[in-house]
Amino acid sequence: MWMMDEKNFVINIIKIANAMELKLKIARWFLYLAILLLPWQMRWFSSGPIIGGYPWEQGSLSIYLSWLPMMIVIMVAMIDAVGARFPRPVPGSLPPGSQDQGRVTLPLPIIAVILFLLPFIFSVYPRASFQWLVEILLLILFFISLQTLHVSRFMIMRWFAISLIPHALLGLWQFHTQNVFGSKWLGMATQNPLTAGVSVIEYAGQRILRAYGGFPHPNIFGGWLAIALPVTLLLVQHAKRSIAKFAWMICGVLFSVALVLTFSRSAWITAGVGLMFVALLFLRRQESWTNKIPACAGMTVIFIALALTTFHERALIAPRVDATVRLEQKSLDERAVGWRNGWQLFRQHPFFGVGPGATAHALNSQLIPHNVPLLALDELGIVGMIGLLSIVYWIFCIQYKKYSILNTSYSILCALLILSLFDHYLWSLWSGRVLLILTLFLFWSIYPPYGGIDSWEK
Image (spheres, rainbow, N blue to C red):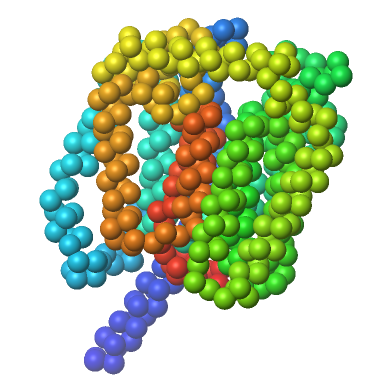
């Protein structure tokens, strides 16, 4: 009898282990799929109103294809959390003082979240605010799921870079053929340089198409590539095998060429800041120069690729840095109008804003501020901004006080902050918010390269 009970116990343990193994396999493959799909714009959508003669993106209701694998990962993480697959830290496992501090400050995040959500009640266009909230909540749950499943930032870095390879190749082809073919299956609209409203450069009486990749605008494509370059440099440094280091260097070259062909000034500045911070942090490390060789080699290869592509396309780059050129003057004027519109809108709705995603509707113009802090202030008001800044402060305090690590992921975060000052898509568009959340995860995650889900890649 005792032998039978012991046998049943062992069988049950094996069944549980197999179930956990299956769960991790499911989470692993759907996580890969989610990250690969996130840059693409494949979706079902219901069109919103027309503003300024163009469809208003924020007024559309959309369901993206990438949401399906994201939701599966979230469900697996919820099951994992309920089953306590990864035990919570026991008392004494956190740094001294962190537990007491958590008990004292617990109500503050709740109050901050309430303040952050209040502007949704006063939204001038609830449909846009609802879409914004759904997307943010889904991304936050995905973020938490990655933490619950102990996904390391190196795993996200790898698949983030891999997901951009087809877009970079597509961007090179688009620039070469001077055409973006439309495909509803890839979520891409047709872009012809002769069509008004398409992002181009005027040179010698010609309209030269900028590289779009699979993104809705070259600036967004450039922003992703600008973050991908320091990510690639980190992957070169941390790769274990020489073939992997070489492969990531090739990716760095590909991303560098594509970045130049987006002709996005904000992306160029962002990439420069990100690479500079990565280089400085590597140089500050107390390591032998032998260990720094991969990073130095990667930086050199990326710099050469950027320099050669810039030299080759110098005739097209010149108009992008010349404020007297017609299209560039128009771009600067529109940005100035966006700034004025932003401040005027804030004065009209100072306390609760116009609601997330509703700025263009409130202005009856697509010329919204190309600056995330000002746009967030317009849509959240003073009350919502206090809540948002409190949440951000709380998160950063936890990260610093628990770990006190100045790691190279800070360089990517600094690059993202620079990007937020020159464009609005990190706040206003799905593809920008995805980039924001993934970058924040690279900053937040402190798990080792292998463990949890990552054990499958070891």
